[in-house]
Image 1 (tube, one colour):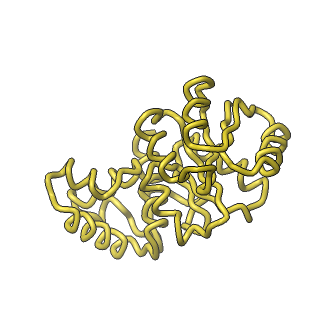
Image 2 (cartoon, rainbow, N blue to C red; image 1 turned 90 degrees about the vertical axis):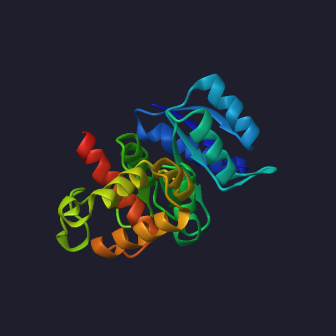
Length: 211
């Protein structure tokens, strides 16, 4: 498994590199301090995973996540940031990341999350599921397929693919506000407390359905 490290602090990159080396089965294939440098490394080394900080030299990590979704969708992105998930978790997932962890997580949690996003899960620290639980049920054991309408399931599936509100609206021929209404209804019906939980639940439900 090839891993690209994107962080503007050399010491933290060295820490991550050592963590990945000790984990086994993974190898750091490149490092970058900026979005432009990261895209060059992606084209050169074809990583399986990119671990991205939100604060980069002369650039924004969320912009890089969007670039990776557009130009290298096969690369799974894990955002590893100083900022709490409640501030940037949902925005990162909407931008195209498959995971969001804070730099306060343990080394074991980072390694586990890398494996989980490669397996198709969406993982957000504090967002409900960095693994575990059944993907066919939501909070309180609510059966997702039986609870949501056909249209809600359509929106739910698109959320599970990490598609944002505007893209969903364009695909379904509806307004952005209508998509937001569907998101709110789905969250209420499934007993989910946050947008991060919604994305995690949707991603894992979709992964279970497609195998």
